Length: 105
Length: 105
DNA sequence: AATGAATACTTCGTGATATGATGTATTGCA
DNA sequence: TGCAATACATCATATCACGAAGTATTCATT
Image 1 (spheres, rainbow over the protein chains, first blue to last red):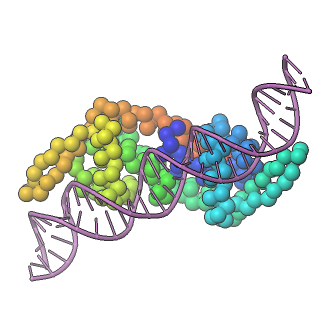
Image 2 (cartoon, chains in turn blue, purple, brown, red):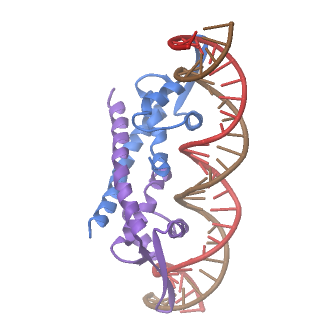
Image 3 (tube, rainbow over the protein chains, first blue to last red):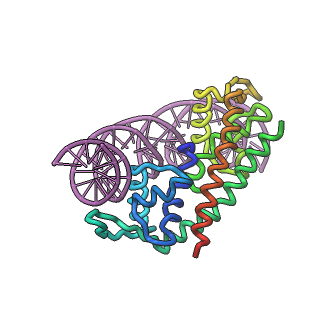
């Protein structure tokens, strides 16, 4: 997918990926993969950003000797998803404009 | 609208705005305004980018003593809109993922 | 035992890009 | 005379996705 189109979706995808149960970096990538591709560097950047914005909290845990950082969504994170859904109405309106102009031929 | 969401839409909006007839900067902003807001500096940056990518051509004309630069869409520009419509299917798939996770409560 | 793939997280540099600020210049209205 | 609207231009800045490179462990295969 076009990188510019991704920009508006990635943050919310990550929040959605942890909404129904805490998850960790590697798993989030695997879970999102069928819908949207993102690299590790991208994901960890996003996780840090969302943490700084208090949209998720982190807890470290050891699993089979390996470190895992579990991410938990906050109320602000849940609200962010709700906002996204609201904004989507505007996105659809913009999409319709493009289609309308395109089919005007 | 969230700036990140805009990023994937602006270029195509500008192309759509000139698809059915050449237009100029100031008019493009007014025409797009009901659907998506963008400032002059943003628009002129986009127009330059699209011109560099051969998605539109420019022609200067004088109108009431004032300079106007009319922008004309190229075949590549038309193709860009078609590509956008294809990519939109992926966007919808991502949106559905977010909704699905959100309503999982 | 050794090798490599998979798991798991981290940091850094880079390029793309939307936007505010600022500037120039003309037209038209109050 | 002054101000809003029209019309285009440039610059600096902040945000962000991503590749590259690194560290370290587990597990299956040879």
